[in-house]
Length: 173
View 1 (cartoon, helix red, strand yellow):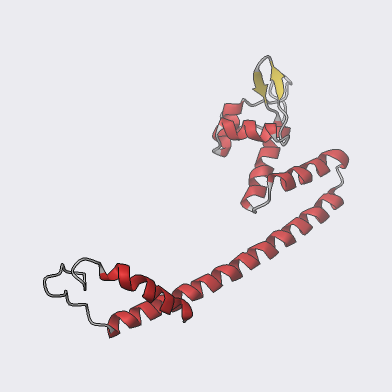
View 2 (spheres, rainbow, N blue to C red):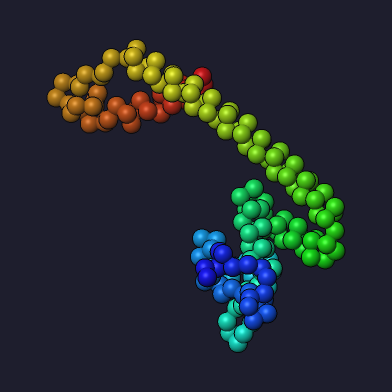
């Protein structure tokens, strides 16, 4: 039976269902390296059978929770703190309270980022409008006598000379 469909209950022989690192990597669309990284961070702790890692339902659930926390933008240290809280005391109230605090912090950071993005987008809109206005106003430069197209002095490109001047005008508003 595929790993994604295995039950948490013991199999027919009474042994708990176990997973290989490859089973979990496939189920969660992760690399085995990512799962080993979570192990290095102390977020999962598989049993060892010789050199092979043997994962139980506990590690499977923890990986699911790690991925959920990452989707929410939590740091691995924050995810680990929540997981450890549950393991130590099985105190759901403390865990939920800490989770609410982490979510509020994350929301505040996201709202600040959204505000910063809105400011940058407004600035881009203003610069783009100014550039389009200037494109409509200024006729295309004619090449100087004997010069190459795109140069006013026969050798120095207009953009090189006028680019800095134009950028200074735009930055002044």
